[in-house]
Length: 347
Image (cartoon, rainbow, N blue to C red; front, top):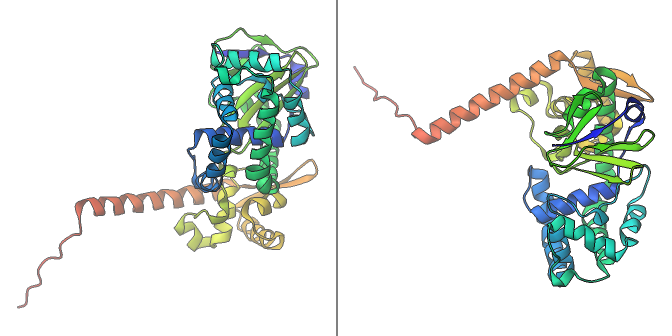
């Protein structure tokens, strides 16, 4: 396993960062994989996978570059460590200015072998930048306003968890293989390579993305980043997602949708972004849920966060269980066929 040695000061000064470049790179990875994790991703892939494949068909060098760069070890030059407050264009400029020799060396590491003849060239940084810019402009930027708020909601939730359960609980939850090992050791992945000592005073960032991808990166000994999938309850597009039918019938579909979402602490602004509902509508529904004791609110910095209470969680889970039971019954009925009504006898 790979792990980093962190001192307490570095961890205490670390921060959660939203990065448009990291989101773009994660979506490039999703396009390359071509398979969706939920209906929202499936719709997004239907819209953008044909254009992505057409781009690669028109540029065989970009096609070979993606194949070589996105392996179990990512070629460093195509994915520089994001910096706080950096725009997509600013991070992409660091891809463009990579040295050609370094780009080829990075690809050899990623491939664990020699480069294909097609990639023995000096314009690899420009090709990589052009591809990333295409993905940003065509497939990420049109959705960025909503995605940024989804990612901000994740950051708020993780930050709140730090104050409630400490850093160990947060680090354990970022990805399936991230673990706080104790004694200032943080497991970052399952690769077998020597541990890295994160220098005291280094910049450490945690960066959410809306896809299921994640990775780690660093620049020298000054800057480190852990990119992780945001909370699943946030990642999907909930504007068209059905809620448990019984719950919707009981409290109303809109309130039921909010109650499902509030497994994660969120502000009204974030709920508006995730659901697509008007601010006034969200506020009215939250007031009803508050009065019913199904959600609670608390202040975190300058934000007011809403979250399900224990009673709200019981209601959601009970509704899901009942819906699952009915679905299992319907499945069993379809497998065994319709029941036969007994003959009716007349006296």
